[in-house]
Image (cartoon, rainbow, N blue to C red):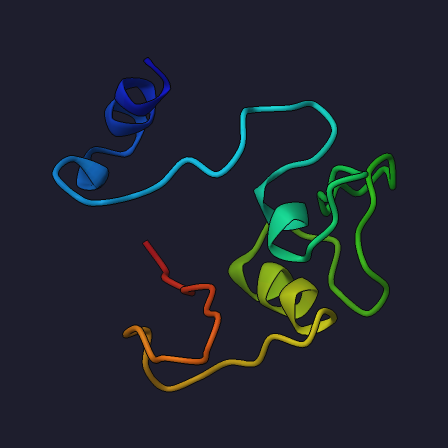
Length: 94
């Protein structure tokens, strides 16, 4: 059921080997999970209601999310392709 919902929301997942690693929860979101934080919701809302790391712009932009990941040790790289020994978050402008 969850897999079908994900594939409907994100059609490019169809036919891939994506993996659901945890159930949906109101406790944290995907950006928090990427940072290893499963205790709070990360969001760059201007009201400061949600957690957002110091030094990252509080805007809903690709750069703000890149900055937030940077506070956790992620760095921009030249290639999005899989590389053994590296954990990557792909930055893609739509």
